[in-house]
Amino acid sequence: MKVLIVEDDAFVREMAVAGLEDAGLEVIEAGSGGEALELLQAGITLDALLTDVRLPGANGWAVARAYRERFPELPVLYVTGYAEQMQPVPGGIIISKPYRIAQVVGVLSTWRA
Image 1 (cartoon, rainbow, N blue to C red):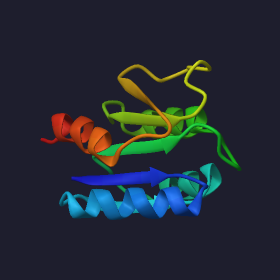
Image 2: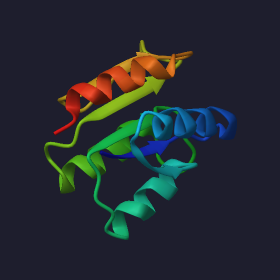
Image 3: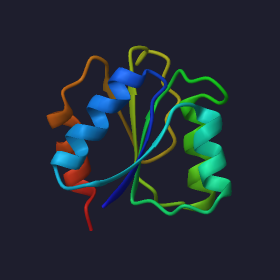
């Protein structure tokens, strides 16, 4: 399973990447919403999107909408400290920060094909 992690906090991103790779997932990472949109334009394919909500360049909602335009069934997992400001795309799941990587792996494992 290939997952894109979009997280502007380098420490949080590195921990998430390490945890997901330890769980046997292939991980691509982006440090901003803009970088995630550049990857989309470059033609990457994914099995799931894990995105923070508050991001420089484009917020997580915009990133998810853009990816879902190209991949309508793409599962989206949002991680945020601002869960009360929900605008998830249909099919998205929100996990509040701080989160345990086991939570993320658990959700992603239900989406594995």
